[in-house]
Length: 192
Image (cartoon, rainbow, N blue to C red; front, side):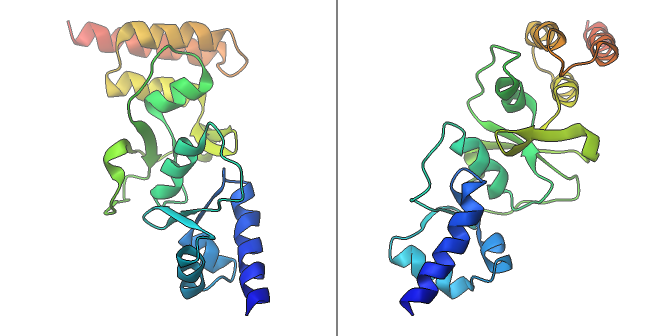
């Protein structure tokens, strides 16, 4: 029995190493770890339940991005990613400091799980080209992020800051920057 527990924990730790120490119940079961074993490992203190269906493997060191990784996994949605204000922060192109983590899921997805009060869940259908990776966490691209923030109604000065700073990187193409600047101008003109 002890060898099984070690084997199960090893499987979970392997998954968690790529996800800032977290693993979902669905991922555990996919890896061949039965739900009762996850419960048993949690009861024995080998796993910490941190959200609905999300567990932390304590042997994996914490990182500064744990909260973001946990937010994406909390949704239970395979298409989930960081977005909007949180993505602006991750990309380092705005001085914004959101008090909640913004995540994006598909329009059809309805989340009915506890613990979501620290998250802002947006429902947009994204194509694969609109999503990339940041520190092993799925995230909207810079152009998609800025476009979402314009639609969301983020303050103009913060969007202009993101356009300026993003334009100085290779992550925001000139054509995208010009298109988004025009979109911002049209939004602001419509609200006058």
